[in-house]
Image (tube, rainbow, N blue to C red; front, side, top):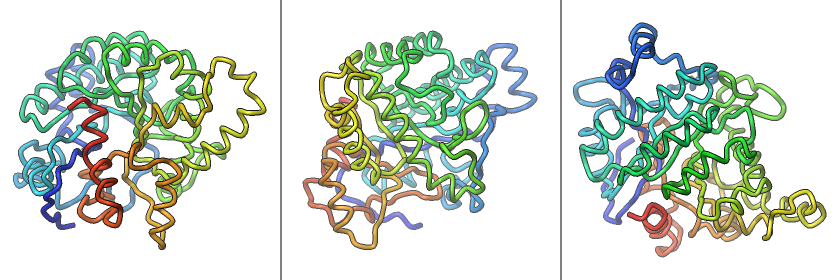
Length: 355
């Protein structure tokens, strides 16, 4: 796909910086993890693989290697042609460490990656901002990691995988949210490993057969996590916390808010800590990224969804570079009003991340 020059300023909220080789992380690890990674690689499980590949072939650096692994080429290939003021680096493989059965190993990988992210990416260009990773199955260690890395001025978010063994609203995770709020960081849920490792099946119906089915059903994971987060009172307990639901689509949100509000009216005694309608918490504390944006045959249907969810105020542009379903900002959402595009492509992220 040829990227066309863009004049409007852009902040991209989901750019995947890749590690070219597992050996790049070895200097940041302690023993015995250093030896394990050197000999066996990362060993992070993935259940569903794209039959067309995940990475764009035109994003391979000039010297070869993995797309997204060369910060200089990322600036040249993505940032400069599209006039991007900042990109949020969300990593890739290490988002999913929470699916490893060995919690200590998962924590070690997360810490090593965070150090690597700062030294090998964030210190290279002021364009780069970072989303640190944590191991969600060890909340106490995750909170300590947030306190260790979170004060860095270029760390703006904590990215976690959509897959989990326990829904994210439950109090097991609250030490993590307390640390994120304390450090002024946004929580960010990103898909990719649902159904893998020690996580639950990727859908309530069980395991699907193909990548097509899995990729299409990802929004159901987001729906379950969002319901849990709201109904368990996370935003009452941590009023300064915000969540980004990344790469899960947006078309499902109106139905979820309507259904949740309706059910809450009759069952509010099961969530007595809530002081507002569930949809109000969502509007005040949750944002979604645009990629992969639903593209109905009739654009007015997408406009209607945007009106239902106040899209111009809760959406953040994301390209998903350098993945196969990359969204070019010069192509998507062209028929939205200019004010709405300015907010989605730039202002919302600038305000959220205090850039």
